[in-house]
Image (cartoon, helix red, strand yellow):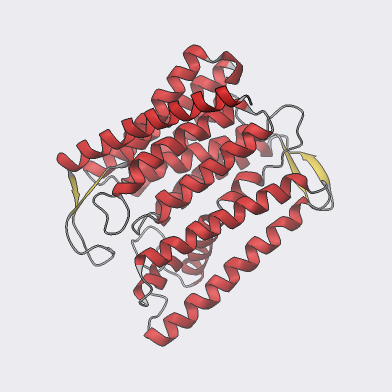
Length: 350
């Protein structure tokens, strides 16, 4: 990429970040209040819905891209599908922030938005498996894609419960994905990740501890959905055998906590739709670890995974899957550390 083009893109990102910050300020001035309850990490009513700024920056960027930058667009139907699905899930999530919707309705809305993306042609058709190679998924492809998009959307939403944790982590993930896509000349993924990063950069200063505003479902579900769709789009970068593992690797810290907590609660016979405060990041905070430190740990995970993603791209096809092992090892160390803090603080899993 030419230096002049890079400066132009940075200028666009700064403008979008400013738009995001302006929208967040409006959401603070005219708040949708999040009143604390037994499951909350905050102790006073705090505005939520700050993710509106992220949504606005992303959608404006995508519309400009659609109108002006043909070289960075994927197929017409897929491009429109991404925009429409993202806007739809943001609208439902904002309604959920205003008045709590049922879990079934939210899940149905997420599934519908994912089906819009699938219907536009964004489907994982092949998957690189360890020791097997590239496998054609056939009819399993749409089902796997649907599961991934809905699962990633909810995982990010579940993890958004502590000041700065998800906003900062996803900012790092988006910047890393943007840089990788630029190196691989995947211009659609590059631009979309840039717009998402700009929106998050405008929001994050207001969400650092003590947060002036929370992202809300409109931000967490939207960002999770967009990154899930970009994971699918990234597999289509021409001339590259880019495994589907790339984006999940960048987000591994968030995905591990969400998956571990869901599996543990299922094994313990808990109602999965019931609210709780037993994610690893919540247990770390409840055991006395400062909020900034917990968020910083997850930011560190994202930076570490960005480094692993670079190794992932450089690795031979037969060894790419091994890059997941150090990411998993770090999460197991984190799990062990949190459990030790829980024992000292006398905290259980419920």
